[in-house]
Image (cartoon, rainbow, N blue to C red; front, side):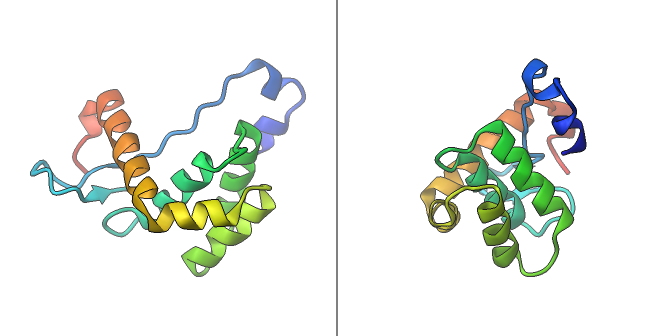
Length: 123
């Protein structure tokens, strides 16, 4: 957050945020792995849903991530608190997390990660 808020940085640098999510194994089971997370990456799913939320500008995404990284406690409560602090819709994020959109976002993020970092495809 500190770098992003440095004068002139947000206007001159294109920030892109991506999840380090990958298939759990190569048997096409549909399960995912993420660093320091339970199987299927429940924290990453909340993050992806927040990033996909209506009005999720890069500034709001970075606000969400700064909050997420600095918070602890029950995952859903963290997600709700950080979503609201970033000025995003908790209803959007919560519905995404519980539905097919969240699953599709995980698959898309995993496909990107595997294509971009093939040497880190398997845990």
